[in-house]
Length: 132
Image (cartoon, rainbow, N blue to C red; front, side, top):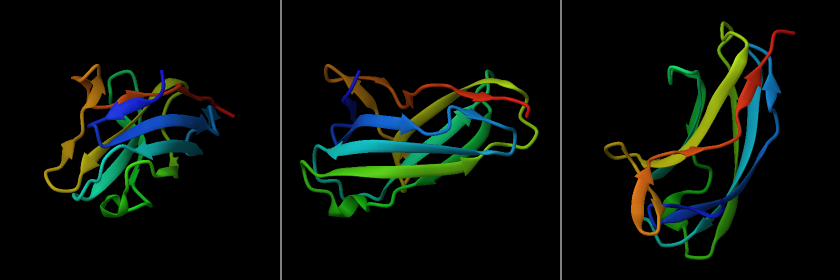
């Protein structure tokens, strides 16, 4: 359920998976919406990974178009994530995960529920890879 608290710094308030079905070698397109909870001086990066059932990455992008050192509490922003799927990825359902890490380290920010860390990633709707 939304919002999802990421490190008491930012929260995921929603997303739109524009490409729930792709072909091998095709592009995944995802929009994520975020709200800033607190100032954050380190350089933050949002990771987006498409994983097979063995948690191997078959597509990814790590980027943040809104520098975290400019964040102010209450700010909202939308991030576009576009990345190709491996051309040899077999058909099936794949896990789509997002999260935030700091450039230094790198260290993933925890996903918090009731003040306790429950994970370091957010699982979104799966992506289906189909042949033709």
